[in-house]
Amino acid sequence: MYHVKIYITYKESILDPQGETIKKTLHQLNYQNVASVTVGKYFEIDLAASDEAPEVEVERMCAELLANVNMESYRYEIEAVSVNEAI
Amino acid sequence: MRFAVIQFPGSNCDWDLYYAVTEGLKETALFVDYRATSFTADAVLIPGGFSYGDYLRSGAIARVAPVMQAVKDFAASGKPVLGICNGFQILTEAGLLPGALRVNRDQAFICQNQALTVANATTRFTNQYQANETIHLPIAHGEGNYYCSPEQLATLKANGQIVFTYQDNPNGSIADIAGITNEAGNVLGMMPHPERASDSLLGNTDGLRLLMSLCGKEVQPA
Image (tube, rainbow over the protein chains, first blue to last red):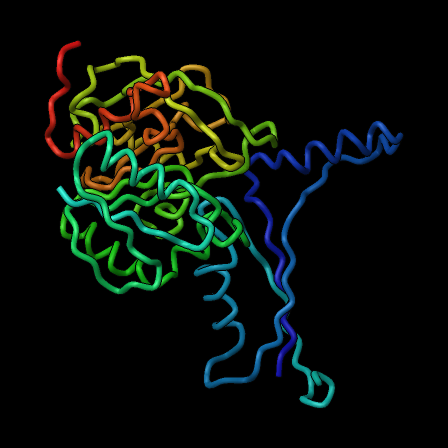
């Protein structure tokens, strides 16, 4: 069993209007030292072991569905967990 | 001519399209359920709305619905496919059109009448418009901010794939793009709603001419 954490954010070339708005708001609240804010999506997936390496499967899931690679980039962390722990 | 209107859970411009085809155009329309694996039609219309509640990204779930394989085969055969608003988003997610639609530049949902330029009046979707004609169509979207890579944009321009552009860019779209075709020219995606401008009772028939272009009907002089 694997526990997978996936992070999706806009590519650097894509303006992130939510992030920009939140940054300005933090400035208004006097956090003047906030240099940038990025808003993204976060997924947790429990993945049963299969014939395929989890990295290969997760990579495919990200490219096929979870991210739109035209405008988003992704990264993930995969942690092996014992079946007891997962339940 | 027989138009298939695809219905996904959350589509909400399906009846508007049906009405525009049957009452405005006086042609045949049929609804095709998202679970269908085949249909018989001369053109496919993918309506606007909020398929699957816009979960994940607009159009991202709809593009894996069973009917989409039949739509891809239909497009590959060279027959016309028109995606409006959420339909445009579904076509980009399905890879039938290049690029993607981001959240509007100013974060807000925009619902207004919009001046557009017909940037290419030689397509099968626009032959009843004049080159560079100004038309008005309603827009209503939160994610209509078109994006593609500089390489893709150069290809779109070189092939005349940019069909409609905004005159006063409301949402931040790259190159003011409101609608594009695929390279073959038989798949059109656009954010503005021609079906909402297809009845003189509503004060505007600029959109009806798009459907007339598709079935070779000429505009009668007023």
